[in-house]
Amino acid sequence: MSQHYLPQIARIEDKNGENAPYCPVCGQPTIKFIDNQQDINYKPCQHLVFIYVNEIDEFEYKSKDFKKRIKKLYSFADDDYFDLNEEVLSTMGYDDSLLVLEITVESMACGPTSSTMIFAFDFGYEEDD
Image (cartoon, rainbow, N blue to C red; front, side, top):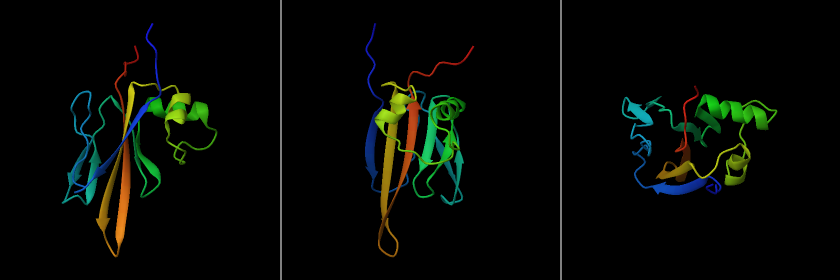
């Protein structure tokens, strides 16, 4: 029997802010930028668990399975923010087959600013029968 560990979170600093991740399992893009990056079209594959955007403090995408796990664990609305750390994700039933990419983009507006998008991919995804 194999031993399972906590989900893994990789923190990445993206210098140019123009790169959205592709699914590391199937290679499908997660985001398609439209109109010079003013609009975003999310393109979830079956491995994408969620996309969280800290600028607006909410999930832009949640898989059906992730929504179910949130409702089992928390009594508040599933759009509310909660701490996305390894222990919480483990409590939700995820293990080391979950890879979370926390991508931070730094830029200048009236001063230095940054935004973070969090993408989670389930390498152990299995379709329900």
